[in-house]
Length: 164
Image 1: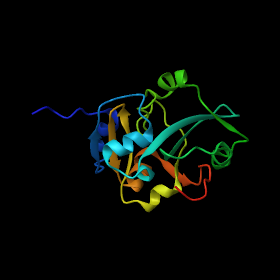
Image 2 (image 1 turned 135 degrees about the vertical axis):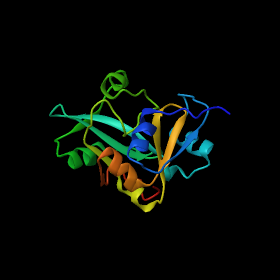
Image 3 (image 1 turned 120 degrees about the horizontal axis):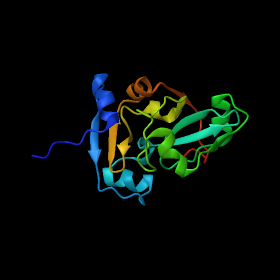
Image 4 (image 1 turned 30 degrees about the vertical axis):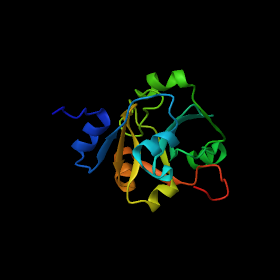
């Protein structure tokens, strides 16, 4: 039997004795978050993507939002106490976080950045985030994610009339 691949995220969660389940799929960096949710057979509102921004002050911030939602940069800036935040360039992601696009997790970045999860995560028993590698997601309780990544909750997505 093939031994399950452990990512740094999984090792961190194991060390904290956090209960989680890993889910693998064929790695394809062209897949959207909604397509990954469908592959996992999950509601896309429970599958979250990790976005990294930089504020006017130069500080970096991490925002975790449902895969079908768009980060509201004004709400994100307000949550972070910044005048404005902007998405970092994709080429900056790996050197800054240690993760590649499509495999960025709020857990286990090279440096801990202030992190917010969209408040809808709290309505689910379990949610999904990247396990730190394209092709692997972890499923865990929102409170366990908050504890592992030092997250706070906030309304940080573009309001689309309530579909999220």
